Image (cartoon, rainbow, N blue to C red):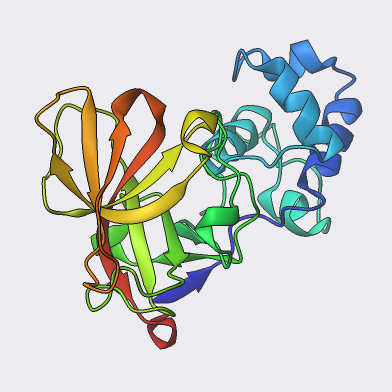
Length: 228
């Protein structure tokens, strides 16, 4: 697998602000053609919010910002606007790897994962996924061993669940904000769902109301750290 770093995270917002001010544009004038979430863009510029890969790409393309400048602060701020055939340099892509216990992660609405990734992994079989995350603990042993890395993809249609497969489940305060990887099984009550550990040392099922689940991710695969 090839490691790809898409954009430096800490100074991206400040450089976006510099580019906007260089064009003498207000927040609304600069971002409205790209997104309706102007407040989020203000937070990105101030460094309170991380910018997503898709949004950064759209801003680069719309305003002809030099990706090298946005990433490193070096080079011309804008690409030559008088050349209609000029193309944006290829932006490295991939799926973010977060070197953090997923139980400690912050999940947002605009960006699923709020923490900055350590790097991006470009591996075609899993490039439709949302994140690589490390596993801690042994409740899912032997399927997943502590230290291995799972690859997850968010499930939008929760009426279609692959029963018996492993999912990363993120709950709200009604379920004590539990974030865990478990096997999912159908409950007789359609408004509930069964979470089960694979390790026989972890006895007993957890039954959740479907309504307390904020996010749901299918675990599509796993790798070891030396594969990354």
